[in-house]
Image (cartoon, rainbow, N blue to C red):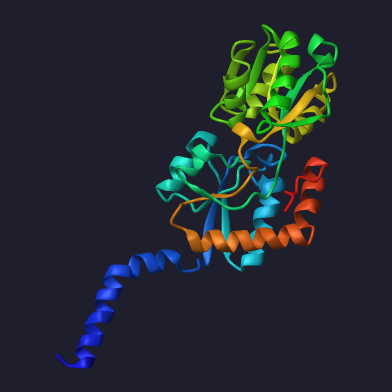
Length: 283
């Protein structure tokens, strides 16, 4: 066998052995991003059927930085991770917290936002007097966080708290307050918002920025944020974009774009526009 033929055979074997992996690592020119489309102001569907919100604007900005074509679609919350893994779309941007459990199944970019979770209640209710309002506790700092939770328990005893199913907010309630409150799960936040306004539940537990958007509506003028905000622990490491574990090239591209959007103040500008506070992660 000549050297030329040996080289040709080696190249062919290399293509067979490593071609698919190499192709998987190539830089994409177009991707599909999925969001829930029902979690205002982070992502929602307008009256004319268009997707809008903080994450929609940020997704378009990141795609422009990566110089790739992006299509953004809506997907029910509980189908996001399963649909990603089977290839229905390429990226999740749906206010999804990065947690160790989720990292067992999918990969995440670095965080593009950090947003505490807390309670929304009626102003004139007993819960309206929950202490520690405006403070923030890291669940990783067990002593301080547990002390804060214990202070809340007497006023939460026996109350019905609404929360979106299959979320880290539900994980928090189950871990820390299952022996104190009645937990009522909802498929979407819109459903638990309606039950709060109708008086069928006593409180909501969700991200404070999403709750603030709900409370800004005229029908929620008698409701308020109460109690502290919680981060870390079951809430993971912040909000990031989810993608398949093998899509390392796309992850690198997204991380670079997120770095740029943090550095030039784009995430600060977009978040202040949509949620009236800066949710930029601290680098």
